[in-house]
Length: 244
Ligand code: GLP
Image (cartoon, rainbow, N blue to C red; front, side, top):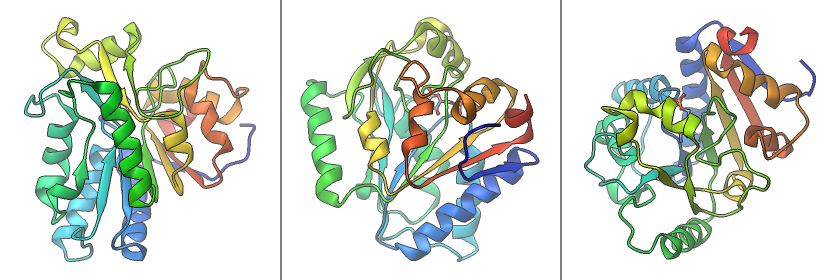
């Protein structure tokens, strides 16, 4: 594959999850009051399970950690099981000693989403910026919910989901009709401004997106390719995603 960037090809999903957890754990140990940018989706579930294990065995302390999540469906109630707030509570926040008041997920009920988005960005900036951002990738190369477009938006914003993402994410809902059509997502500048980015890609479904990140010309039509410009990007993938 073409462009040089730190990439670790793991044998399988579990090995990738463990490797990602080591990076996050190191970051937390070195920055006990650090700010994490967190992601949802199937991909980081294993990573969160490893972090919970590390917490339970006394290796990790989340008490000083602040977190900002990348995205949330809109509209959605926080207690809807498919909300990303619920996902984070279920997989991480309720299982470690993080102070829930320091966990921020975009508000899927915000009555004025634009004002909410500006405030989210200001809050992240005032907190000192994101130290380490975790990312998955959509099959079409979306990151967060930054869908393919002629131009990507820099800050947090309300966005419309593409049909392919609605279809891909419908596996978590009763039917595709139940998937919200919009989402609030951090923008490309939020991601690029993070001190470090760890991108995870697992499974054959992600082969095209990963190949584009590693080989294709940079284009907003495949948002993940823009990450290449990040000065501190680490890619972790499994063999299925790498070899297809
Ligand atoms: C979702 C999320 C993304 C995630 C992607 C891949 O739509 N908004 O943040 O990276 O799709 O999800 P999965 O890991 O389930 O394949």
